[in-house]
Amino acid sequence: MNAMRTDDGVTLAVSTVIFALGERGLRIPLVRRIREPFDGRWALPGGPILVEEGLESAARRNLLATTGVRSTYLEQLYCFGDPDRSPNERVISIVYWALVRSDEAALAAENENVRWFPADDLPELAFDHNVIVAYALSRLRTKMEYSQIAHAFLGPTFTLAELREVYEAVLSRPLDPANFRRQVEKSLIDTGERLTGARHRPPRLYRYDASPATKDEASHVVS
Amino acid sequence: MNAMRTDDGVTLAVSTVIFALGERGLRIPLVRRIREPFDGRWALPGGPILVEEGLESAARRNLLATTGVRSTYLEQLYCFGDPDRSPNERVISIVYWALVRSDEAALAAENENVRWFPADDLPELAFDHNVIVAYALSRLRTKMEYSQIAHAFLGPTFTLAELREVYEAVLSRPLDPANFRRQVEKSLIDTGERLTGARHRPPRLYRYDASPATKDEASHVVS
DNA sequence: ACAAAAGTGTTGGTGCTACACCCATGA
DNA sequence: TCATGGGTGTAGCACCAACACTTTTGT
Image (cartoon, rainbow over the protein chains, first blue to last red):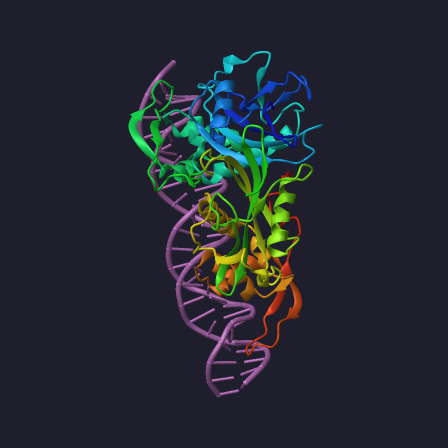
Protein backbone atom coordinates (compact mmCIF):
# COMPACT_ATOMS: atom_id res chain seq x y z
CA MET A 1 0.00 0.00 0.00
CA ASN A 2 2.86 2.31 -0.83
CA ALA A 3 1.35 5.50 -2.18
CA MET A 4 1.42 9.27 -2.20
CA ARG A 5 0.87 11.15 1.00
CA THR A 6 -1.08 14.37 0.98
CA ASP A 7 -0.55 17.57 2.93
CA ASP A 8 -3.02 16.50 5.55
CA GLY A 9 -1.63 13.02 5.98
CA VAL A 10 -4.04 11.37 3.59
CA THR A 11 -2.55 8.65 1.42
CA LEU A 12 -4.05 7.69 -1.90
CA ALA A 13 -3.55 4.30 -3.54
CA VAL A 14 -4.91 1.87 -6.09
CA SER A 15 -5.29 -1.82 -5.29
CA THR A 16 -6.47 -4.67 -7.47
CA VAL A 17 -8.27 -7.92 -6.78
CA ILE A 18 -7.12 -10.31 -9.49
CA PHE A 19 -9.09 -13.48 -10.16
CA ALA A 20 -7.80 -16.47 -12.10
CA LEU A 21 -9.38 -19.86 -12.53
CA GLY A 22 -7.12 -22.80 -11.77
CA GLU A 23 -7.82 -26.50 -11.39
CA ARG A 24 -8.78 -25.94 -7.80
CA GLY A 25 -11.20 -23.08 -8.34
CA LEU A 26 -10.88 -19.32 -8.13
CA ARG A 27 -7.50 -18.03 -7.08
CA ILE A 28 -6.16 -14.62 -6.12
CA PRO A 29 -2.55 -13.39 -6.06
CA LEU A 30 -1.44 -11.60 -2.92
CA VAL A 31 1.78 -9.84 -2.06
CA ARG A 32 3.61 -9.98 1.24
CA ARG A 33 4.05 -6.71 3.05
CA ILE A 34 7.62 -5.88 3.88
CA ARG A 35 7.05 -3.07 6.34
CA GLU A 36 4.72 -1.78 9.02
CA PRO A 37 1.86 -1.72 9.42
CA PHE A 38 1.03 -5.38 8.95
CA ASP A 39 4.63 -6.30 8.16
CA GLY A 40 4.74 -9.87 6.87
CA ARG A 41 1.02 -10.13 6.23
CA TRP A 42 -0.46 -10.83 2.82
CA ALA A 43 -2.20 -7.97 1.07
CA LEU A 44 -3.75 -7.04 -2.25
CA PRO A 45 -1.33 -5.85 -4.91
CA GLY A 46 -1.40 -2.11 -5.04
CA GLY A 47 0.56 1.05 -5.42
CA PRO A 48 0.50 4.77 -5.93
CA ILE A 49 -1.19 6.71 -8.69
CA LEU A 50 1.31 8.49 -10.86
CA VAL A 51 0.63 12.11 -11.56
CA GLU A 52 -0.17 11.81 -15.24
CA GLU A 53 -1.75 8.40 -15.00
CA GLY A 54 -5.42 7.37 -14.98
CA LEU A 55 -6.77 5.24 -12.18
CA GLU A 56 -7.32 2.29 -14.46
CA SER A 57 -3.77 2.60 -15.77
CA ALA A 58 -2.51 2.37 -12.23
CA ALA A 59 -4.52 -0.78 -11.73
CA ARG A 60 -3.06 -2.18 -14.94
CA ARG A 61 0.41 -1.56 -13.60
CA ASN A 62 -0.51 -3.59 -10.52
CA LEU A 63 -1.83 -6.31 -12.73
CA LEU A 64 1.23 -6.41 -14.94
CA ALA A 65 3.66 -6.36 -12.05
CA THR A 66 1.85 -9.13 -10.22
CA THR A 67 0.85 -11.48 -13.01
CA GLY A 68 2.65 -10.40 -16.16
CA VAL A 69 -0.72 -9.96 -17.84
CA ARG A 70 -1.13 -6.81 -19.86
CA SER A 71 -4.64 -6.72 -21.22
CA THR A 72 -7.74 -8.30 -19.73
CA TYR A 73 -11.03 -7.51 -18.11
CA LEU A 74 -10.61 -4.75 -15.54
CA GLU A 75 -13.25 -2.76 -13.72
CA GLN A 76 -13.43 -0.42 -10.77
CA LEU A 77 -14.83 -2.09 -7.68
CA TYR A 78 -15.19 0.55 -5.02
CA CYS A 79 -13.36 3.32 -3.24
CA PHE A 80 -12.57 2.45 0.37
CA GLY A 81 -11.85 5.39 2.61
CA ASP A 82 -12.85 4.68 6.15
CA PRO A 83 -10.71 6.81 8.49
CA ASP A 84 -9.76 3.80 10.61
CA ARG A 85 -8.95 1.26 7.95
CA SER A 86 -5.24 1.77 8.40
CA PRO A 87 -3.54 2.45 11.75
CA ASN A 88 -1.72 5.76 12.20
CA GLU A 89 -2.53 7.16 8.81
CA ARG A 90 -5.46 7.92 6.59
CA VAL A 91 -5.44 5.76 3.47
CA ILE A 92 -7.97 6.01 0.67
CA SER A 93 -7.85 3.09 -1.73
CA ILE A 94 -9.47 2.92 -5.12
CA VAL A 95 -9.89 -0.77 -5.74
CA TYR A 96 -10.18 -2.48 -9.13
CA TRP A 97 -10.92 -6.07 -9.92
CA ALA A 98 -9.62 -8.08 -12.86
CA LEU A 99 -10.12 -11.45 -14.48
CA VAL A 100 -7.16 -13.20 -16.06
CA ARG A 101 -6.66 -16.49 -17.82
CA SER A 102 -4.69 -18.85 -15.63
CA ASP A 103 -2.45 -19.83 -18.54
CA GLU A 104 -1.64 -16.17 -19.15
CA ALA A 105 -1.02 -15.29 -15.56
CA ALA A 106 2.52 -16.35 -14.83
CA LEU A 107 1.51 -18.56 -11.94
CA ALA A 108 5.07 -19.84 -11.99
CA ALA A 109 6.11 -16.32 -11.00
CA GLU A 110 5.25 -17.13 -7.44
CA ASN A 111 7.99 -16.29 -5.01
CA GLU A 112 8.61 -15.30 -1.43
CA ASN A 113 6.56 -12.14 -1.89
CA VAL A 114 3.84 -13.14 -4.36
CA ARG A 115 1.60 -16.14 -3.85
CA TRP A 116 -1.75 -17.34 -5.20
CA PHE A 117 -4.47 -18.27 -2.72
CA PRO A 118 -7.87 -19.89 -3.11
CA ALA A 119 -10.40 -17.06 -3.20
CA ASP A 120 -12.69 -18.60 -0.61
CA ASP A 121 -9.99 -19.61 1.83
CA LEU A 122 -7.70 -16.67 2.45
CA PRO A 123 -5.48 -16.03 5.44
CA GLU A 124 -6.04 -12.97 7.57
CA LEU A 125 -4.97 -10.12 5.34
CA ALA A 126 -3.59 -6.67 6.04
CA PHE A 127 -5.95 -3.73 6.51
CA ASP A 128 -9.55 -4.39 5.47
CA HIS A 129 -8.48 -6.49 2.53
CA ASN A 130 -10.54 -9.52 3.55
CA VAL A 131 -13.65 -7.37 3.33
CA ILE A 132 -12.56 -6.03 -0.02
CA VAL A 133 -12.00 -9.50 -1.47
CA ALA A 134 -15.37 -10.65 -0.16
CA TYR A 135 -17.01 -7.72 -1.88
CA ALA A 136 -15.14 -8.38 -5.12
CA LEU A 137 -16.24 -12.00 -4.99
CA SER A 138 -19.87 -11.10 -4.56
CA ARG A 139 -19.60 -8.64 -7.44
CA LEU A 140 -17.99 -11.26 -9.66
CA ARG A 141 -20.72 -13.77 -8.88
CA THR A 142 -23.51 -11.27 -9.40
CA LYS A 143 -22.07 -9.97 -12.65
CA MET A 144 -21.56 -13.50 -13.90
CA GLU A 145 -25.30 -14.01 -13.99
CA TYR A 146 -26.21 -11.11 -16.22
CA SER A 147 -23.13 -10.36 -18.31
CA GLN A 148 -20.55 -12.07 -20.44
CA ILE A 149 -17.49 -11.71 -18.22
CA ALA A 150 -16.96 -15.48 -18.02
CA HIS A 151 -15.25 -15.24 -21.40
CA ALA A 152 -12.41 -13.34 -19.79
CA PHE A 153 -11.29 -16.58 -18.16
CA LEU A 154 -11.09 -18.37 -21.52
CA GLY A 155 -9.09 -18.17 -24.72
CA PRO A 156 -10.46 -16.88 -28.02
CA THR A 157 -12.25 -20.16 -28.74
CA PHE A 158 -13.74 -22.63 -26.29
CA THR A 159 -16.27 -25.39 -25.98
CA LEU A 160 -19.56 -25.06 -24.20
CA ALA A 161 -18.30 -27.46 -21.55
CA GLU A 162 -15.34 -25.20 -20.85
CA LEU A 163 -17.57 -22.17 -20.57
CA ARG A 164 -19.93 -24.07 -18.31
CA GLU A 165 -17.07 -25.13 -16.08
CA VAL A 166 -16.17 -21.48 -15.60
CA TYR A 167 -19.68 -20.69 -14.45
CA GLU A 168 -19.75 -23.73 -12.20
CA ALA A 169 -16.44 -22.84 -10.61
CA VAL A 170 -17.38 -19.23 -9.95
CA LEU A 171 -20.91 -19.91 -8.77
CA SER A 172 -19.75 -23.13 -7.09
CA ARG A 173 -22.76 -25.13 -8.10
CA PRO A 174 -23.39 -27.56 -10.96
CA LEU A 175 -25.37 -26.42 -13.98
CA ASP A 176 -27.48 -28.50 -16.32
CA PRO A 177 -25.52 -28.82 -19.58
CA ALA A 178 -28.67 -28.91 -21.71
CA ASN A 179 -30.19 -25.78 -20.24
CA PHE A 180 -26.86 -24.00 -20.03
CA ARG A 181 -26.41 -24.49 -23.75
CA ARG A 182 -29.72 -22.87 -24.58
CA GLN A 183 -29.03 -19.92 -22.31
CA VAL A 184 -25.67 -18.91 -23.72
CA GLU A 185 -25.81 -20.29 -27.24
CA LYS A 186 -27.45 -17.22 -28.77
CA SER A 187 -24.64 -14.96 -27.64
CA LEU A 188 -21.93 -17.17 -29.14
CA ILE A 189 -20.64 -17.74 -32.62
CA ASP A 190 -19.98 -21.24 -33.87
CA THR A 191 -16.51 -21.30 -35.41
CA GLY A 192 -17.38 -24.42 -37.40
CA GLU A 193 -14.41 -26.19 -35.89
CA ARG A 194 -14.48 -28.95 -33.33
CA LEU A 195 -12.20 -30.05 -30.57
CA THR A 196 -11.05 -33.58 -31.32
CA GLY A 197 -8.98 -35.94 -29.27
CA ALA A 198 -11.26 -36.76 -26.36
CA ARG A 199 -12.83 -40.17 -26.33
CA HIS A 200 -16.33 -38.95 -27.00
CA ARG A 201 -18.19 -36.92 -29.59
CA PRO A 202 -16.04 -33.89 -30.44
CA PRO A 203 -17.63 -30.65 -29.20
CA ARG A 204 -17.98 -27.51 -31.29
CA LEU A 205 -15.63 -24.59 -30.72
CA TYR A 206 -17.30 -21.25 -30.17
CA ARG A 207 -16.09 -17.73 -29.85
CA TYR A 208 -17.55 -14.75 -28.05
CA ASP A 209 -19.96 -12.64 -30.07
CA ALA A 210 -18.69 -9.10 -29.54
CA SER A 211 -21.44 -7.49 -31.59
CA PRO A 212 -23.16 -4.47 -29.99
CA ALA A 213 -26.38 -6.39 -29.39
CA THR A 214 -24.71 -8.88 -27.11
CA LYS A 215 -22.14 -6.45 -25.79
CA ASP A 216 -21.60 -5.69 -22.12
CA GLU A 217 -22.73 -2.46 -20.58
CA ALA A 218 -20.31 -0.80 -18.13
CA SER A 219 -19.41 1.51 -20.97
CA HIS A 220 -19.98 4.92 -19.53
CA VAL A 221 -16.49 5.57 -20.80
CA VAL A 222 -14.92 7.45 -17.99
CA SER A 223 -11.83 7.72 -15.86
CA MET B 1 -14.62 21.40 -6.23
CA ASN B 2 -12.66 22.93 -3.41
CA ALA B 3 -10.59 20.19 -1.85
CA MET B 4 -7.26 19.14 -0.46
CA ARG B 5 -4.22 19.27 -2.69
CA THR B 6 -1.58 16.64 -2.39
CA ASP B 7 2.18 16.94 -2.58
CA ASP B 8 2.21 16.05 -6.23
CA GLY B 9 -0.58 18.40 -7.22
CA VAL B 10 -3.34 15.85 -6.92
CA THR B 11 -6.58 17.12 -5.45
CA LEU B 12 -9.08 14.84 -3.75
CA ALA B 13 -12.77 15.63 -3.41
CA VAL B 14 -16.20 14.18 -2.84
CA SER B 15 -19.16 15.18 -5.00
CA THR B 16 -22.78 14.13 -4.79
CA VAL B 17 -25.54 13.69 -7.34
CA ILE B 18 -28.77 14.39 -5.49
CA PHE B 19 -32.07 13.28 -6.98
CA ALA B 20 -35.46 14.56 -5.91
CA LEU B 21 -38.82 13.94 -7.49
CA GLY B 22 -40.88 17.04 -8.17
CA GLU B 23 -44.07 17.60 -10.12
CA ARG B 24 -42.05 17.87 -13.29
CA GLY B 25 -39.98 14.74 -12.89
CA LEU B 26 -36.51 14.06 -11.55
CA ARG B 27 -34.57 17.09 -10.42
CA ILE B 28 -30.98 17.68 -9.37
CA PRO B 29 -29.52 20.56 -7.36
CA LEU B 30 -26.42 22.20 -8.76
CA VAL B 31 -24.15 24.88 -7.39
CA ARG B 32 -22.63 27.74 -9.30
CA ARG B 33 -18.86 27.88 -9.40
CA ILE B 34 -17.42 31.12 -8.19
CA ARG B 35 -13.86 30.73 -9.44
CA GLU B 36 -11.75 29.28 -12.19
CA PRO B 37 -11.78 26.85 -13.78
CA PHE B 38 -15.33 26.96 -15.11
CA ASP B 39 -16.16 30.13 -13.18
CA GLY B 40 -19.90 30.77 -13.37
CA ARG B 41 -20.76 27.30 -14.60
CA TRP B 42 -23.06 24.95 -12.74
CA ALA B 43 -21.47 21.95 -11.03
CA LEU B 44 -22.30 19.12 -8.68
CA PRO B 45 -22.21 19.97 -4.99
CA GLY B 46 -18.92 18.82 -3.57
CA GLY B 47 -16.11 19.53 -1.21
CA PRO B 48 -13.03 18.23 0.52
CA ILE B 49 -12.72 15.18 2.70
CA LEU B 50 -11.88 16.10 6.24
CA VAL B 51 -9.02 14.23 7.81
CA GLU B 52 -11.01 12.28 10.36
CA GLU B 53 -14.10 11.91 8.20
CA GLY B 54 -15.38 8.96 6.19
CA LEU B 55 -16.14 9.38 2.52
CA GLU B 56 -19.83 8.88 3.07
CA SER B 57 -19.80 11.46 5.83
CA ALA B 58 -18.30 13.95 3.44
CA ALA B 59 -21.07 13.21 0.97
CA ARG B 60 -23.62 13.73 3.74
CA ARG B 61 -22.13 17.12 4.41
CA ASN B 62 -22.64 18.01 0.76
CA LEU B 63 -26.17 16.79 0.99
CA LEU B 64 -26.96 18.73 4.13
CA ALA B 65 -25.38 21.92 2.87
CA THR B 66 -27.20 21.76 -0.44
CA THR B 67 -30.62 20.51 0.53
CA GLY B 68 -30.92 20.67 4.31
CA VAL B 69 -31.60 16.94 4.33
CA ARG B 70 -29.74 14.95 6.94
CA SER B 71 -30.62 11.31 6.50
CA THR B 72 -31.64 9.55 3.30
CA TYR B 73 -30.52 6.99 0.80
CA LEU B 74 -26.87 7.53 -0.10
CA GLU B 75 -24.55 5.29 -2.05
CA GLN B 76 -21.17 5.55 -3.67
CA LEU B 77 -21.39 5.90 -7.45
CA TYR B 78 -17.87 5.81 -8.81
CA CYS B 79 -14.45 7.31 -8.44
CA PHE B 80 -13.53 9.56 -11.33
CA GLY B 81 -9.84 10.20 -11.76
CA ASP B 82 -9.00 10.79 -15.38
CA PRO B 83 -5.84 12.95 -15.55
CA ASP B 84 -7.47 15.42 -17.94
CA ARG B 85 -10.85 15.89 -16.32
CA SER B 86 -9.82 19.20 -14.86
CA PRO B 87 -7.57 21.73 -16.58
CA ASN B 88 -4.24 22.58 -14.95
CA GLU B 89 -4.60 20.23 -12.02
CA ARG B 90 -5.20 16.62 -11.24
CA VAL B 91 -8.52 16.09 -9.45
CA ILE B 92 -9.80 12.76 -8.23
CA SER B 93 -13.46 12.82 -7.27
CA ILE B 94 -15.28 10.19 -5.30
CA VAL B 95 -18.88 10.63 -6.31
CA TYR B 96 -21.93 9.62 -4.31
CA TRP B 97 -25.57 9.67 -5.29
CA ALA B 98 -28.54 10.32 -3.06
CA LEU B 99 -32.31 10.23 -3.18
CA VAL B 100 -34.30 12.77 -1.20
CA ARG B 101 -37.96 13.50 -0.73
CA SER B 102 -38.89 16.70 -2.47
CA ASP B 103 -40.84 17.92 0.54
CA GLU B 104 -37.79 17.39 2.73
CA ALA B 105 -35.34 18.99 0.40
CA ALA B 106 -35.59 22.70 1.00
CA LEU B 107 -36.36 23.45 -2.62
CA ALA B 108 -37.16 26.96 -1.46
CA ALA B 109 -33.50 27.28 -0.51
CA GLU B 110 -32.72 28.04 -4.11
CA ASN B 111 -30.63 31.13 -4.54
CA GLU B 112 -28.09 32.69 -6.83
CA ASN B 113 -25.68 29.82 -6.23
CA VAL B 114 -27.93 26.79 -5.81
CA ARG B 115 -30.57 25.82 -8.32
CA TRP B 116 -32.56 22.69 -9.13
CA PHE B 117 -32.53 21.43 -12.70
CA PRO B 118 -34.48 18.72 -14.50
CA ALA B 119 -32.24 15.65 -14.54
CA ASP B 120 -32.69 14.99 -18.23
CA ASP B 121 -32.22 18.56 -19.38
CA LEU B 122 -29.11 20.00 -17.80
CA PRO B 123 -27.00 22.89 -19.03
CA GLU B 124 -23.38 22.31 -19.89
CA LEU B 125 -21.74 21.66 -16.56
CA ALA B 126 -18.24 22.16 -15.24
CA PHE B 127 -15.63 19.42 -15.62
CA ASP B 128 -17.03 16.02 -16.63
CA HIS B 129 -20.12 16.49 -14.52
CA ASN B 130 -22.54 15.87 -17.37
CA VAL B 131 -21.03 12.44 -17.81
CA ILE B 132 -21.24 11.81 -14.10
CA VAL B 133 -24.90 12.74 -13.93
CA ALA B 134 -25.68 10.55 -16.92
CA TYR B 135 -24.00 7.65 -15.20
CA ALA B 136 -25.86 8.31 -11.95
CA LEU B 137 -29.13 8.40 -13.87
CA SER B 138 -28.47 5.08 -15.51
CA ARG B 139 -27.54 3.58 -12.15
CA LEU B 140 -30.71 4.93 -10.57
CA ARG B 141 -32.85 3.49 -13.35
CA THR B 142 -31.13 0.12 -13.25
CA LYS B 143 -31.30 -0.14 -9.49
CA MET B 144 -34.94 0.84 -9.53
CA GLU B 145 -35.78 -2.38 -11.31
CA TYR B 146 -34.30 -4.80 -8.84
CA SER B 147 -34.28 -3.04 -5.49
CA GLN B 148 -36.51 -1.06 -3.21
CA ILE B 149 -34.91 2.38 -3.51
CA ALA B 150 -38.12 3.97 -4.81
CA HIS B 151 -39.27 4.20 -1.20
CA ALA B 152 -36.58 6.78 -0.54
CA PHE B 153 -38.64 9.27 -2.54
CA LEU B 154 -41.70 8.71 -0.37
CA GLY B 155 -42.77 9.25 3.21
CA PRO B 156 -43.25 6.46 5.76
CA THR B 157 -46.64 5.50 4.34
CA PHE B 158 -47.88 5.76 0.78
CA THR B 159 -50.43 4.40 -1.63
CA LEU B 160 -49.62 2.05 -4.45
CA ALA B 161 -50.45 4.80 -6.91
CA GLU B 162 -47.86 7.07 -5.31
CA LEU B 163 -45.26 4.34 -5.46
CA ARG B 164 -46.13 3.60 -9.04
CA GLU B 165 -45.82 7.26 -9.96
CA VAL B 166 -42.27 7.22 -8.61
CA TYR B 167 -41.40 4.31 -10.85
CA GLU B 168 -43.10 5.90 -13.82
CA ALA B 169 -41.28 9.18 -13.31
CA VAL B 170 -37.87 7.59 -12.96
CA LEU B 171 -38.27 5.07 -15.75
CA SER B 172 -40.26 7.60 -17.77
CA ARG B 173 -42.76 5.11 -19.04
CA PRO B 174 -46.27 4.19 -17.89
CA LEU B 175 -46.79 1.00 -15.90
CA ASP B 176 -49.89 -1.16 -15.71
CA PRO B 177 -51.45 -0.51 -12.29
CA ALA B 178 -52.77 -4.05 -11.98
CA ASN B 179 -49.47 -5.73 -12.73
CA PHE B 180 -47.49 -3.21 -10.75
CA ARG B 181 -49.55 -4.03 -7.70
CA ARG B 182 -48.79 -7.72 -7.93
CA GLN B 183 -45.08 -7.09 -8.40
CA VAL B 184 -44.50 -4.92 -5.36
CA GLU B 185 -47.33 -5.94 -3.04
CA LYS B 186 -45.44 -8.80 -1.43
CA SER B 187 -42.64 -6.52 -0.26
CA LEU B 188 -45.04 -4.05 1.37
CA ILE B 189 -46.99 -4.04 4.60
CA ASP B 190 -50.59 -2.95 4.65
CA THR B 191 -51.00 -0.42 7.44
CA GLY B 192 -54.74 -1.07 7.53
CA GLU B 193 -55.38 2.61 7.01
CA ARG B 194 -56.71 4.24 3.89
CA LEU B 195 -56.26 7.59 2.26
CA THR B 196 -59.63 9.29 2.11
CA GLY B 197 -60.62 12.54 0.52
CA ALA B 198 -60.25 11.79 -3.14
CA ARG B 199 -63.40 11.36 -5.15
CA HIS B 200 -62.91 7.67 -5.73
CA ARG B 201 -62.45 4.51 -3.72
CA PRO B 202 -59.95 5.27 -0.94
CA PRO B 203 -56.66 3.46 -1.52
CA ARG B 204 -54.82 1.49 1.17
CA LEU B 205 -51.77 3.00 2.81
CA TYR B 206 -48.69 0.80 2.83
CA ARG B 207 -45.31 1.02 4.39
CA TYR B 208 -42.00 -0.44 3.35
CA ASP B 209 -41.24 -3.91 4.68
CA ALA B 210 -37.73 -3.55 6.07
CA SER B 211 -37.46 -7.21 7.09
CA PRO B 212 -34.24 -8.97 6.11
CA ALA B 213 -36.00 -11.10 3.48
CA THR B 214 -37.04 -8.12 1.46
CA LYS B 215 -34.06 -5.97 2.40
CA ASP B 216 -31.70 -4.38 -0.07
CA GLU B 217 -28.26 -5.78 -0.67
CA ALA B 218 -25.44 -3.22 -0.97
CA SER B 219 -24.59 -4.09 2.61
CA HIS B 220 -20.98 -5.00 2.42
CA VAL B 221 -20.69 -2.52 5.26
CA VAL B 222 -17.79 -0.45 4.20
CA SER B 223 -17.09 3.16 3.77
C1' DA C 1 -19.90 -52.92 -28.30
C1' DC C 2 -19.26 -49.62 -24.74
C1' DA C 3 -18.30 -45.45 -22.13
C1' DA C 4 -18.58 -40.70 -22.13
C1' DA C 5 -19.86 -36.48 -23.27
C1' DA C 6 -22.38 -33.71 -27.11
C1' DG C 7 -26.52 -32.25 -28.36
C1' DT C 8 -32.04 -32.32 -28.93
C1' DG C 9 -36.88 -32.80 -27.36
C1' DT C 10 -40.51 -32.49 -24.13
C1' DT C 11 -43.15 -31.37 -20.18
C1' DG C 12 -44.72 -28.89 -16.26
C1' DG C 13 -44.36 -24.80 -13.64
C1' DT C 14 -43.77 -19.88 -12.91
C1' DG C 15 -44.08 -15.32 -13.86
C1' DC C 16 -45.25 -11.54 -16.65
C1' DT C 17 -48.34 -8.67 -20.04
C1' DA C 18 -52.46 -7.22 -21.66
C1' DC C 19 -56.89 -6.36 -20.84
C1' DA C 20 -61.64 -7.23 -19.09
C1' DC C 21 -64.17 -6.46 -15.26
C1' DC C 22 -66.12 -5.28 -10.59
C1' DC C 23 -65.79 -2.09 -6.23
C1' DA C 24 -66.14 2.05 -3.38
C1' DT C 25 -66.11 6.66 -2.85
C1' DG C 26 -67.13 12.02 -3.61
C1' DA C 27 -69.66 15.14 -6.12
C1' DT D 1 -75.83 8.13 -11.07
C1' DC D 2 -71.61 9.11 -12.84
C1' DA D 3 -66.70 9.72 -13.09
C1' DT D 4 -62.49 8.14 -11.16
C1' DG D 5 -59.18 5.51 -9.70
C1' DG D 6 -58.80 1.10 -6.49
C1' DG D 7 -58.56 -3.52 -6.83
C1' DT D 8 -59.35 -8.64 -8.82
C1' DG D 9 -59.51 -12.24 -12.43
C1' DT D 10 -57.73 -14.50 -16.33
C1' DA D 11 -55.89 -16.00 -20.88
C1' DG D 12 -51.72 -16.10 -23.54
C1' DC D 13 -47.05 -16.09 -23.91
C1' DA D 14 -42.12 -16.50 -22.74
C1' DC D 15 -38.91 -18.51 -20.10
C1' DC D 16 -36.79 -22.02 -17.34
C1' DA D 17 -35.71 -26.40 -14.64
C1' DA D 18 -35.77 -31.17 -14.93
C1' DC D 19 -34.92 -35.08 -17.26
C1' DA D 20 -35.50 -38.52 -21.06
C1' DC D 21 -33.49 -39.45 -25.13
C1' DT D 22 -30.51 -39.64 -29.41
C1' DT D 23 -25.80 -38.82 -31.59
C1' DT D 24 -20.91 -39.24 -32.29
C1' DT D 25 -16.58 -40.07 -31.15
C1' DG D 26 -12.22 -43.01 -29.00
C1' DT D 27 -10.99 -47.26 -27.17
